[in-house]
Length: 273
Image (cartoon, rainbow, N blue to C red):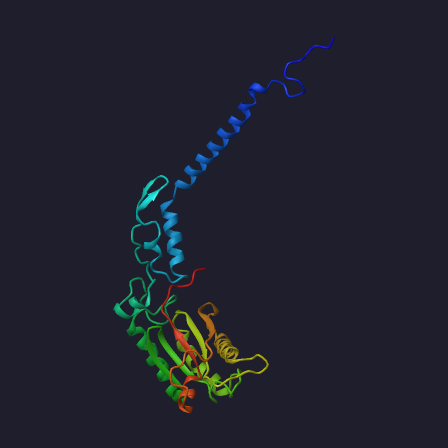
């Protein structure tokens, strides 16, 4: 007679199987609390460097104050970050137009390596230098030099000066103007934004619109500045089409003023290597 085995089958004694489930649960809980402990350890210095680095590219001055405000976290109350001290050479437009001098800017004039314009007085000096150079070449009537919230704006007329009508090919007169200004523009290291603008007269040649024309004209001027030896890291080009006029578009004179290319000399942080 076959002996009756207790429990039957190949499973063995069922009374200890709960230990396997219990062991798995304890292991998962241990891993979970180790993870909580790991993410609660914040390197404050590295975190502040990260936040400070995000502030400039996203143009959000509130990012430092808006992160980690006082509140309850998983390891207790968090402490509000200390206000960031401005770094030497880093400034916004409010500093540029309100402060008589920016700490950290090198002395020694325009031939000093790493020279960034930081005051209205310095921008005025550049405007006077450009005006003198343009007047000596007899082309001053084609260029406007203005200071606004962006910095020093050099506005060049496009009609039969920089470009033929509806074209993005720089004319000899435009090349001469850019060549005259290039030595002055090369005497400092601020970024220069090249901005193209058009009037509201429709331009649609198989999908080629005022947007395309303004962008192509800005790029064409940028290429000339590169040929004149300006550092490519300082330059950028943007096309705004007809959407940033400086005069009404309901008169020929207004439309002519709106057809322009602007070189915007801005005070900003030196580019990193």
